[in-house]
Image 1 (cartoon, rainbow, N blue to C red):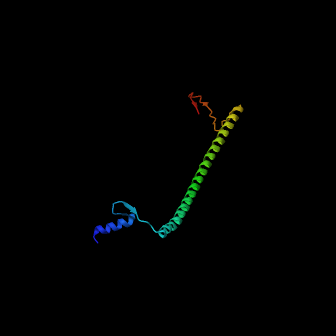
Image 2: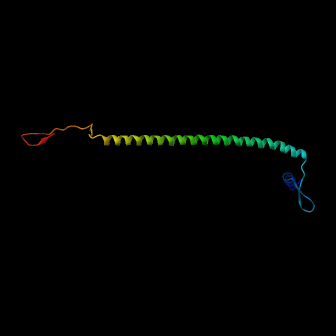
Image 3: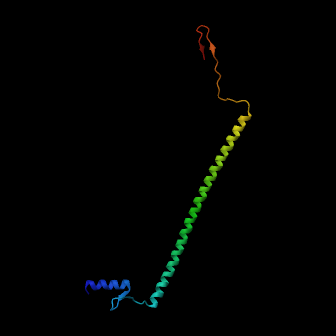
Length: 123
C-alpha cells in the first residue's frame, strides 16, 4: 500500500463515512451490538460525572455558606462594639453634665515665694 491509501483508510475509519459512486457521502450503519455497547459505557460515565459535579457543587456551596457566616459574625461583632462605645460615651457625657464640680486628678500645686533681697519670684 502506498502512503495515500493508508491515509484514506485512517480517514475512512475515523469519519465512518464513505462515498458512493456519485460522490455523495453516506454514513456506514453501525451494528446494534456496537450501539448498545457504547450506551452501556456512556451511561455509567455520565452518572459518575453527574455525581462528581454534585459533590463539587455541594463543597463549593458549603464553603460559600461558611464564608458568609464568618462575614455576618464579623459585622455583627463590629456593630455591637460600636454601639457599646457609643453608649459609654453617651453615659460619660451625661454624667459630666450632671456633676457640678470638675475633678482634676493630676494637678500639681506650685507655690510662689518672693525673696526679699532680689525681689524675684521663685518657684
